[in-house]
Image (cartoon, rainbow, N blue to C red; front, side):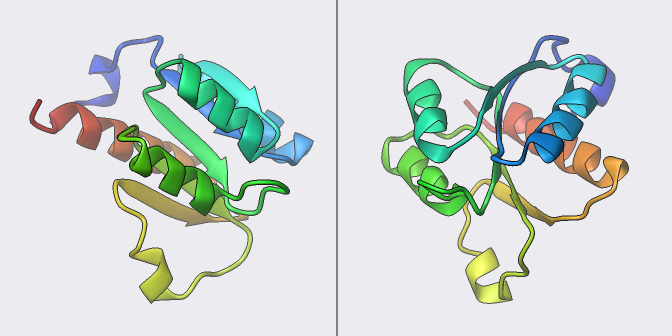
Length: 132
């Protein structure tokens, strides 16, 4: 199992969040952990970035104005982009719908710093331990 200290220090993360406050807060957590962070304010901008470069992880709000996090994730999987995705939602989703997100995790706002860190490292560890 991959430990936090063994992750490459500049793992790249795309953070997709339309709220400036949440985007700044999560970005600060990520940079504090040594990640290289790119940001997008909406799903279409995120899709453009995902289509043009590699990310180790995508963190996306579910409630984006133009392409929500679920649609972004589905587009990624339809295009064989297997990057792990951490979805963040301010609205509770029923359990059946929650289980429909392959290779992803879902956390709810408001979240604790330790909760999002754990989800990030769990997804990265899972991705790094998957067979090639």
